[in-house]
Length: 81
Image 1 (cartoon, rainbow, N blue to C red):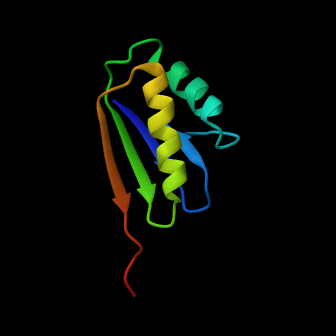
Image 2 (image 1 turned 30 degrees about the vertical axis):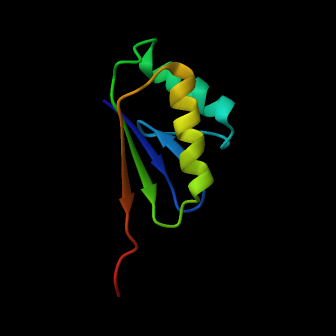
C-alpha cells in the first residue's frame, strides 16, 4: 500500500519521503519510484484540513497518469480546543 500525505503547509510526503515541490510532474516521479511500475497497489491520500483542494487534485492527476486506480482519500480534522 502507498501512503501520500498532504500537509497543512503545502508539502507532499510519499511513504515518509517529502517531495521538493508540488508540481504534478514531481508527484508522478515520486509515485513512479515507490510503485516500481506496479499501478495495482492502492494509494491512500491523507490531506490535512488546511490543505488546498488543488493539491488533492494534483495527486489524482498524477495517479491517473500512472494508471493508479485504487485510491482512498481521508482528511485530518483540525484538533478541537
